[in-house]
Image (tube, rainbow over all chains, first blue to last red; front, side):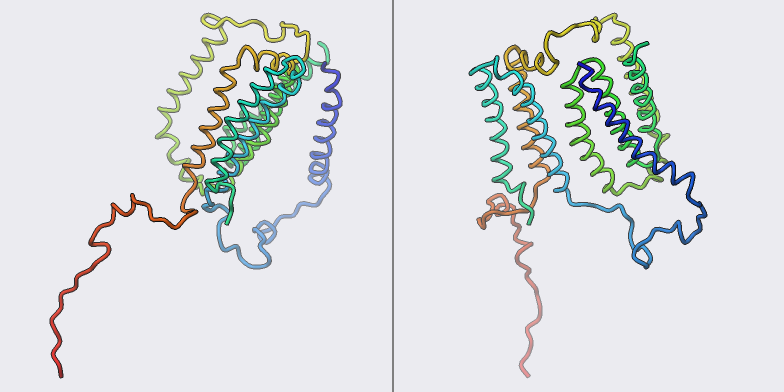
Length: 118
Length: 198
């Protein structure tokens, strides 16, 4: 079984190489002469006027949390899709109940306006 | 040693280093990114244990969704790192207590005194891991599966209830707000002397 994942391993290794290689080459080959002007944060020619960290609208997190929940729902669908042939009608009904419960949440979310962004 | 043994040591080495980096990095963004690396190496180890579905689910759910949320929160939170560091020693006794408790729990699990476990790599599966999970999850573990749906539903509703505010879909007045109205908020009686005609 692990043989079929060998391309994935190669892909990871090549990806790491492509990612790390240029950084290391740049570190070794490029001239390194920092000064105050170069080290200061650059913001289109004028002084930076506020910190990068600030209070954000909580709705960004709401979108992320809802994404996680529906991502988990999708995760349950993968093994179901693999074994559906042997499960038959019963397995189909079980998944429909599962999805039905979550659709209740989806309708609530939609009607409540959690997906709107005015 | 065969090739997979080398891979195991590679992944576990990266996992240990990344986990150490999570708790030692000064910048919380670096901690979160190290945690992503730790998840990836853990997924690699699970793959070596033939747990395909878990490995892919770890990458999809944790790296793809949970860590995105973490990074989101960590990058945008208004944290003063200096102020956090000053309170380190005042939290230390509680942290030490929790750490000792955690080490004790791990000891109980690892030493097999109270929890007996079989060798995870020693159970051969006739079919793939995903197939084995699917064949029991929707039949033998039907109730826990539906409970998972209810938990997800509760999570959806609570996330919306906790974070939604202000948006009104109708113009009717809420009776709760009507009852709370105080006379002094609405009417101000001003006493003043009557002015004389000139």
